[in-house]
Image (cartoon, rainbow, N blue to C red):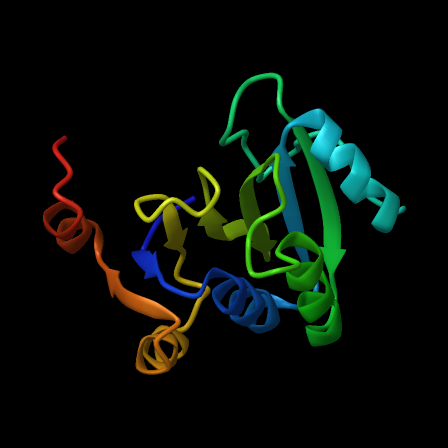
Length: 155
């Protein structure tokens, strides 16, 4: 993934729903985590791939499970967000979410939405990010250089 901006989430479920909605249509969502957690998830999503395949890479650990499902409509986007974050919190055992559109990963939330591990590619419009910030869904969005300074990251 070419990370264009890192996001600082405040309201994670609303962020996920907005990003999924913006990328819906000929897109796919990859959910990665503990096998037991994803086995339960796959009962709700019967037609899924269960192993990573390009452009998705493992973000959690080498023996994690992955469920890949289609994302065709804004309604599906809302349903997927509700399934993954039923009470505004990520399902236990889910560690990473990636969204692919046109062959490129455009959204990645790793380490269960850890504030240093949420990023977007250039397929996510800046106007959407500005709107998410205005609504208080994210605290901000940062270029790679800004993110290093903001999150006090050392190379």
